[in-house]
Length: 260
Image 1 (cartoon, rainbow, N blue to C red):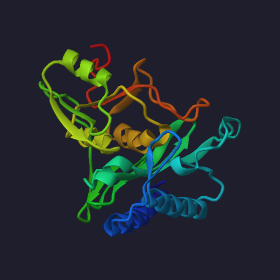
Image 2 (image 1 turned 60 degrees about the horizontal axis):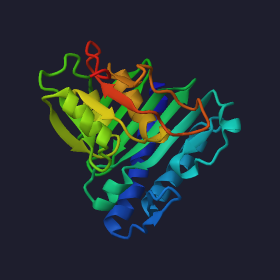
Image 3 (image 1 turned 45 degrees about the horizontal axis):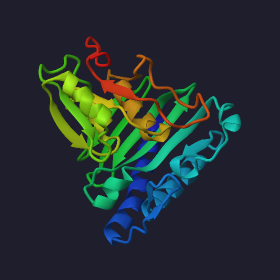
């Protein structure tokens, strides 16, 4: 697992370079998918790099990417292990040029992400985790272990979506009471919880499985939890739809973040 994790870290950096080539050119080639979400040349360039790399590294493990997600559940449900990829998470942030977008690659086994990398192309920061290996942040050539804030702050730091703040989240935060809200794009919200910079990320809105798998592994290996409103860990490839239920991401397990 340790060697495979290093390979995936390198692959995410290569995909990040493909994204930055488009980012710096200014020619994003923005199109829109059937759900009206944006698609750019960078999404497709990163997708090609990652799929080619994964097929070379693990030819027997199937790949499900946001940009090639039309695989029937009848086929997917037979997969014991597969790669789940978001080649460019935070396309809206990419188009806004605010730097808050990531490359997400996760290895999922029996419905659970067990190895993952979240790479931030603009800052060259990598978050990497694997069962039995640990969880790390790589920044400026320095590799360090990270962990969640196990005892939440009296005035919790809550991270929320920069582009998708739902009315449900606003109502939840009113019930939560005093807090500090930090707005952030992409899977970086999970990573802030994983490294103890935020206590909570409530997601009461739509996400897809490729949006969350890699970052969920980072949080869980850092000692946190990603749970549905029923208190169960977020699961993958268990149904026809690739949409996630609402969920909470947190480090302090002693607090009931759901029933507020």
